[in-house]
Amino acid sequence: MKYLFIIAFTCFQFSFAFCQHSGGRSGQGGRSGQGAPPQESTQQKETVKALKITDVAGLIVYNPETVIKEAKVKKAPEQELMTKLINDYNSKILAIQKANIVTLETIEITSMTKQKAAVENNDRKQLMELRKSINEQLKPIRDEVATVEKELNEQIESSFSEKINKKWLDYLKDQKEALQPKTPSESRPEGGGGRGMR
Image (cartoon, rainbow, N blue to C red):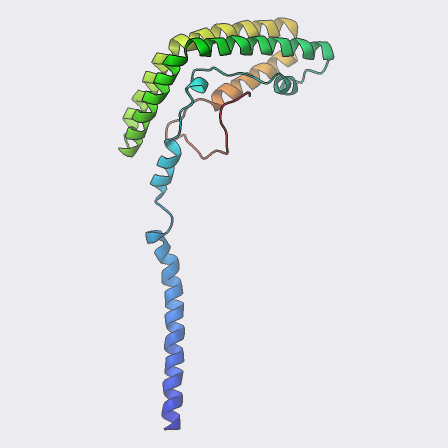
């Protein structure tokens, strides 16, 4: 009787250990079924985000201190001049934005609705058409911005060294490219953000 009890207890321990081992492995494998959401859902979540139409239109205001730092403007008189030029530019950009605020808000609301529908339907073609439509609607505003930007660039070119001018143009290019909308295949998770003075 004693031996039967020992044999039964040993079998029970073996079975319990086997179940724990099997359960642990199946738990790791089972996470694909009930764990994190599918990758596509995550991508969609990041794609459907508020479209900052002012950024897309190029209505960007710059922080004079940041520009001075990025362009490596070191002399005090030149820093004062750069500050004045950037502030003048910002004022003109804000005036353009104010004059077109109704158009901008309409495009932003309409495009967000269409973007969400396209993503939910996984319709890449519709997303591309939406981008084209937005670009066409924003062209008049972008033309105004381009005129003001050209004036600023000419002023900086004539007032500063070639080295400072090049660094300014590089900074300007980087800021504009960073704010342009991307297609789903181009989109990547980014840190916080939000429009403001660059």
